Image (cartoon, rainbow, N blue to C red):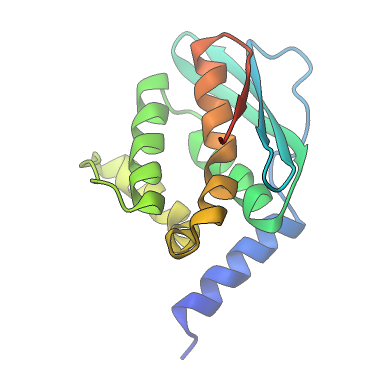
Length: 153
């Protein structure tokens, strides 16, 4: 039987090598950049919003496998979600990777959180938590609409 940790590593490596939604959206309604000065990871998150719903989400950047995989998985789970649902997923994900107090998720979001589970092992490596959350912090800045570059320090 395959070890769960091995399966999670395979998922991270797959998304790190073949990221989904790795592209620029030509006319995004929201965008923001993220930078992790400790390791040099950089990401730009692009959103196309339809009202309060994320119609499309993509990213570009360069970074380690965890940073790239986190951005790839994030884009997969956020398409079609409302801004509130995106914030709820981020809060729960952040709690899972930092060891913070977890929030209760509604059933559809709980299913999406399962897709992010492979990344939660980074909590054992505090320096890697910033890699896993960089794209989420950029997403949050994009949703705020300030277009700022966020840093993980």
